[in-house]
Amino acid sequence: ELFEKSKKFFEDKDIDNTLDHYEKAIERIDRTKLTNKSDYLQFLQAVLQHCKDNNLLEQEALALRALGRTYSLFKHHAESMKCHYQSLKIQKKLGKKVETAEGLVFLAEDLEVSGSYDKSIEAFQEATEIFQDLGKLRNIKDITKEINRLKEFLFLIYCGLCVFIIFIINKFRFKFKCSTNLVISHIF
Image 1 (tube, rainbow, N blue to C red):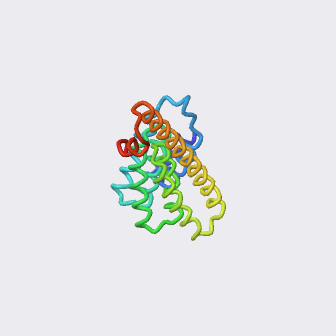
Image 2 (image 1 turned 180 degrees about the vertical axis):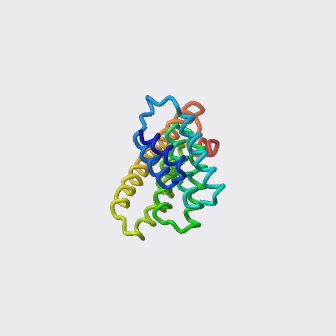
Image 3 (image 1 turned 120 degrees about the horizontal axis):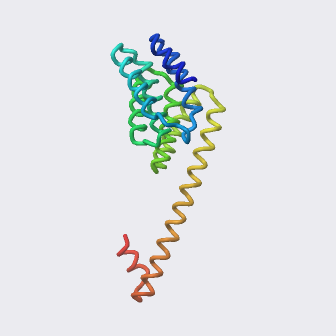
């Protein structure tokens, strides 16, 4: 229903309402029941092209962000990150702090899914700094939880890696009857 309203607004060339209703629509999408993924992508590509053709820079950035979120929803994370980076570039150029911070959060989520945990934390931290400047304490609290969760996850990964390396060292040390230092020098 919201997607159809978004299409109607686009027919009337009301880009702000088009993007607003589209954002609401994708927040409510049930991926398991979705059969027309290409409809969403084609629609947003048309909106994006309209924004480019009419030099609507602010709406272009929002369309790119919506396209990024849509790609992410459909598990096309590489395309999603490209759109988010392009959107952020425009938002920063326009000086749109709230939109930039929100875009950084979406980018951080995609970076996390792609396994770039350190970059994800960096994007979250940059968003936190912007929200701090804007006095958006609730956003800061939510993002801080995400950062802490990611740091905890990374710690567990690194601990697991250390355990694995120690296991390998011990395995080779007993197998070849050599010192731990010799094994470490061959591994690294």
